[in-house]
Image (cartoon, rainbow, N blue to C red; front, side, top):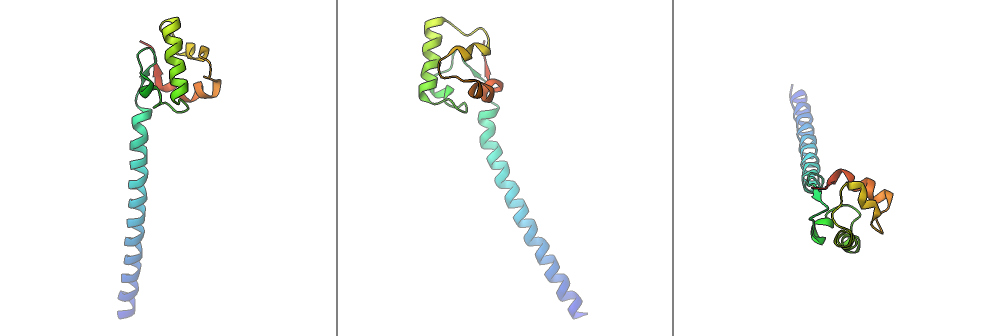
Length: 105
């Protein structure tokens, strides 16, 4: 009987440890998702965005953000998000990554 109880305690301890590891990894994954959701869930209006706001977008650094603003200042507001492809430095791959995160108003 003592052996059975001892084994049960070991099994319970193992399951408890496994539960701690699982819940820890889920918490880390949720934290990672939450921090990314700030970027993913934010729609950036490319007609009003600042350099800082544009650089939130994946693949848009300071130079590309400045190019977007310069294009907007020289040519007027974007009428469609696809117009962003007219900006030098915004390749198809970059556009595909950000198209779901940008809007024009």
